[in-house]
Length: 70
Image (tube, rainbow, N blue to C red; front, side):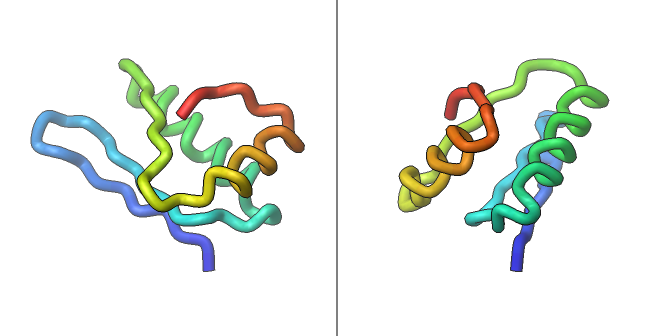
């Protein structure tokens, strides 16, 4: 099951966390996160969590043409 956890921190920062997202939902998740960032404004920072699968994540991005950094 794909899951996105959204937290609003005390300083107003919106923090989202995901585990691996299925290829069927990957593009939808990316669009959803881009929309949140667009509506909220400010700086966007992405970080790959320790223990997350870098190989599968990079493979998915290489396949769909994403170029953002983590």
